[in-house]
Length: 310
Ligand code: ADP
Image 1 (cartoon, rainbow, N blue to C red):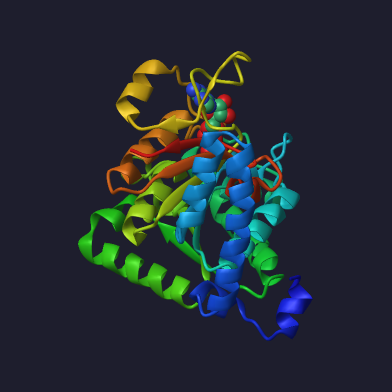
Image 2: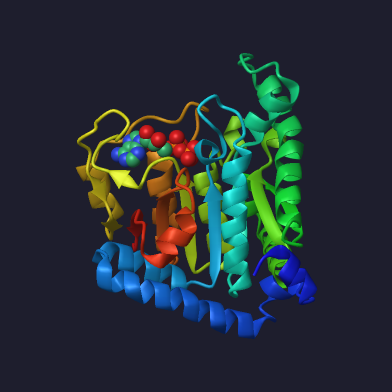
């Protein structure tokens, strides 16, 4: 059903994320299940396993990395963003509840002001993120609006997760937003976070968010198909590891590259994010957000990634 049809049917995004559209949910779940069943017959057990996991998960945190949001020139990739939003809305339409954790404020800041990108000092980096965060949210707002869906900004710091009462408030706000059909877009509050109190990367932030919300699944979208036995960008022979049940063993068996070009993240923080959510019984999937329709394809059993079952 396209946007016009949905609007004509009087269906609101709030009702969709709220789960009021139970009929749509059943129908769409059936749809995914059907497509997934086909995939199970035709594809590898790994693809079928991931597809089943997505179908079984109702509350999903999706973390979108800087690499997914930017093109090779380091600019914001609106097309990629649009494709991800479109897929998230499809999931919301079939009854899933979604929280987005999004990087990209720095890139958006550079794009908006077109200077300071080479300035190394903290003040400028934080200033760029402050400018870029507005641009990032404007982009999400416009894209989700196409589907008649509201977004909300949640800027968090490490201290928010360490403090019991703040913890509770974040949790309540997230629950209220999602219950009311709004998609929360979470990011670290870079302009108040100095190194000592920083979460430091959105992989960790998304894991903390998934645990706090009690998600069924955390999905990290990056620019690689999953975890490899060595950095696939340096070693073309690197082999993809599709399932992980022991994070410590994985770390002994693979070689990990350093942080990314923004000086954060890298594969190490993704593996640690998996450990964090797995401890709470939440699985994590690392998928290639650079691939068009990756969420649809993973749900259909047409694409794989690395799934951490803990
Ligand atoms: P994002 O911005 O999407 O969070 P990062 O750049 O932080 O992504 O981390 C993903 C990068 O980690 C990949 O592009 C890849 O080059 C690098 N990497 C290093 N070692 C590995 C490995 N063993 N398996 C997969 N990726 C790896």
